[in-house]
Image 1 (cartoon, rainbow, N blue to C red):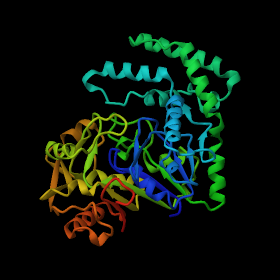
Image 2: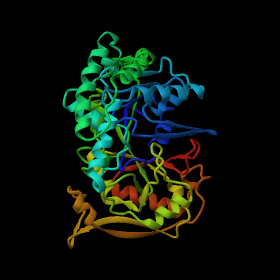
Image 3: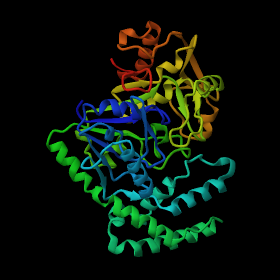
Length: 422
């Protein structure tokens, strides 16, 4: 498999958790390099379902080493809860999970500041998960954030916390929010520090030691390309770099050590939260929701659904350098007689083949569709590429050609054995 960066090529929720879980059978080290607990990866192993927010999905494979890199923002309490959940399900993380000492902390005042900001925006709110991710990254950029190294420095933690809580509360009060009590924060984070200290390490050195030993490294991306702070549908984006470049800066991996970039896409398109969505279609959304599909792993909110957008996905492939594809949720289209694909946009009478920069322009584009015949056959029992209906294969090959990438994986359900290597 070599060293591979896995990225979402849409708006997140592409099914990356399952694909990561499948690929980790071949990997030695799995790295999470950006985002926070606002991401959710769902993995189904037999009858058990695991929803992970901070810990790489590779932890579910015995013997795999998992690193949480410096580009991730971590709520220590949430991470402890995730560790407890894995322990209850008999997943042993000892000696296999390490957390970067450079990773920044998400604090209770970050959550309150985010809630204040969303309330002030009113109908123009971003639709965040309210987990404090944006304000945590804001403190990082402002050089006022606290890191995992600070958390486990028990001698100086209390003084640093006191200063930051005091400063944050001034802002919270100015926004009309509820001040965060210092004692509660100090008690909560001191307790989490004791639990997490054994996992904190210099993960950059560990990563380079693994590379020197010719280990195969898999980077587990969170969210998707169009939520990237630079390349996404700004301002309706997350606060980190969700593209392949973020895997390098968020871990210490040099770009010249990357062998493949694997883009994960759904056979259609979904989005959670506010922001433009050119191919959104209520009918396909109703169909998928009635099937019990497309509800967020983190928030439980129903996802907005639409047809496959070849314009946006092709641009995502260019930005990330995607050379391989994993296409998921193919079975979600099994009942449709016809399937539409957006081939271009029309904006103010002009046909364009790229995603405009301004969100208002993206909201105004009209998709130019091409129609493909549906296969109207259950695909969930397929074991090989040839088992898929010919019309399904033609559809998948057509969208891969539009993106100019090779199909590596076709996924026809959430289970590990519902995965076809092409």
